[in-house]
Image (cartoon, rainbow, N blue to C red; front, side, top):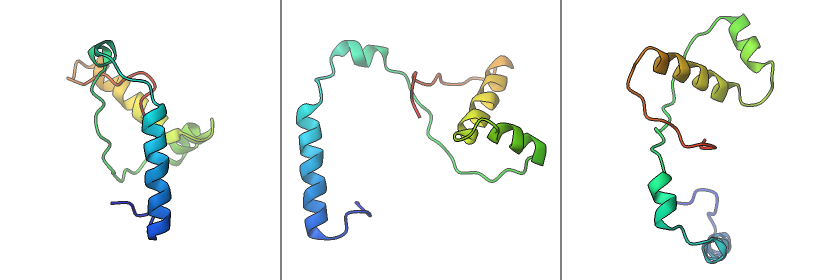
Length: 91
């Protein structure tokens, strides 16, 4: 379902753009899929953190939630918890 292309003309433009993108993308070979890793899905949560912790995370600008996730993942993996490795550059 495309929520941002509601009118038929916008939907048509979106599909045309998608088709052009597919044609211009390189073929992905077996080597690509052999190196691929599982990326866990994200889950929306609400968490209460101390104000100074949030300020510290936000100090470097955009992406503070990603930084918090990476910090938590590092701690989790250092404690020997099973975790799937993220693909490099994956969001």
